Image 1 (cartoon, rainbow, N blue to C red):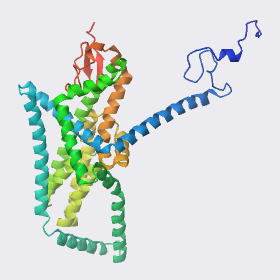
Image 2 (cartoon, rainbow, N blue to C red):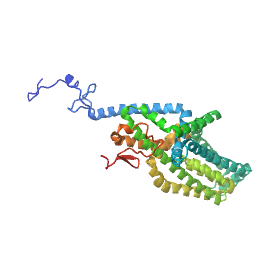
Image 3 (cartoon, one colour):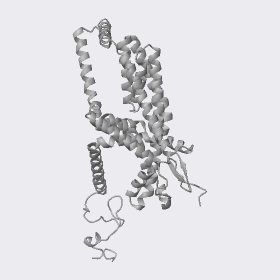
Image 4 (tube, helix red, strand yellow):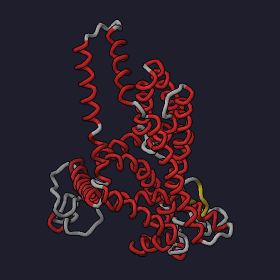
Length: 422
């Protein structure tokens, strides 16, 4: 009952019942351990166990969320497309409204203008393809025979059976690697009806975001508890700004890639230069994978129509444009707009393509960028200083990308307290 110095020793059964705060290493401040924890376990093992069950719970929650998204992909993908497009059109609508356009007319002009641009690009590409593919089978056969003759006469000393076996292996590898993207395309719509339904859902979602984005965001904020609304509203603001910056910068990068490769194909006399440019523009929205695939298509077209010499020159043009994008455009432009490390971009695209094919690769980087800035904002704790009266409906990130709360100023993606605010 008493220690060596006469102080009374509290039994372990009573000591563990005292409600004290748990320390990070699994013990309580006075050196004991909480109820239900074996005292004989090392502190490191208790710490590992505490982290393990939390990580397992977090992983299970993420897995359930991903499962639900995959099951509802026919709804989620069109809505994500609408959100991504609205990040471009909401500032345009705001610009027209500030120049005394009626809001309804501004929304209609932005929506119809976007549809006209997309339809024009598709029509131009389809028309050029229809004109340029006349006699395609004969040209493919002639190009194949020419390439085979060059390889057989090369110092490699290949025989025709070996060359045929090699080409068959290459074709099987291409088919195997393309299964991920084919399955991803099928997830968007396994039939024409699914595709049309998704298109209509995306258009309706885009229309309602442009018309009543403020009400939609206010409803989302009201779902959360009162104490969390400041954090949700601020995180949504910086996330929306990041998404808008990504969309604008991605269009700029895609346009530069399309012009560079398309002009290079036209100068080399490669047919279908305009469809190649359109394909590169669309493919550039999928980082890394899309640009490489579009460049490979340009090289194949040059090989079929112009021979292997022009194909090698076309490959040089594609590599030059990709190097400019990778070493100049991505670090200087995209790196400033999207605060995601290049390794994170690669891993996000790989994970997205494995989970959802083309759709996953398309949305991987914007989702990663938005989550990055939102988590950074919440961890910064700036939202704790935001007065509750500034949180509700009036300042929605769907309509205002730069917060105008009194006493705060914007620095990049962070919102800092102004030094002049009292």
